[in-house]
Image (cartoon, rainbow, N blue to C red; front, side, top):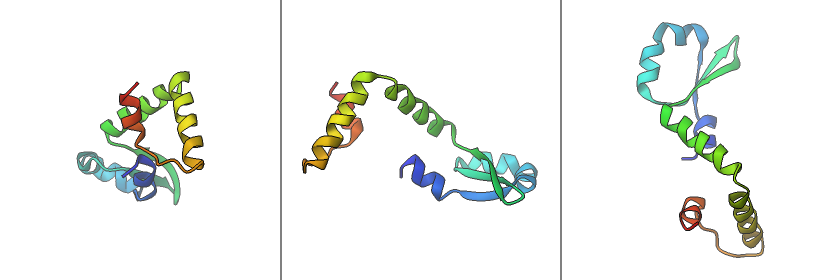
Amino acid sequence: MTISNALLRAKSIGVRNFRDSASRFIRKHEFLIITEHGSPASVLLPYNDILEIVDILEELEDKKIVKIIAEGRKAIRRGAKGILASKALKNN
């Protein structure tokens, strides 16, 4: 599951309920949306997922990788079969 899908499927909990049971939610290692008065206020993410997000952001700063991704997207639009980005990046 992608990070964005996990976030979209994340459970929501009110800030008071989270405060009362924070350690239990942290041990579950799940995405959790914390709300205040019914509106999203914060997100609890597992540590490994944060590391993955940081890796992605760092890769996006690399102009060579961004160019490779753009070329791949153009090729897919022209009908080429796609491959996983992780596989493409391992070859470079």
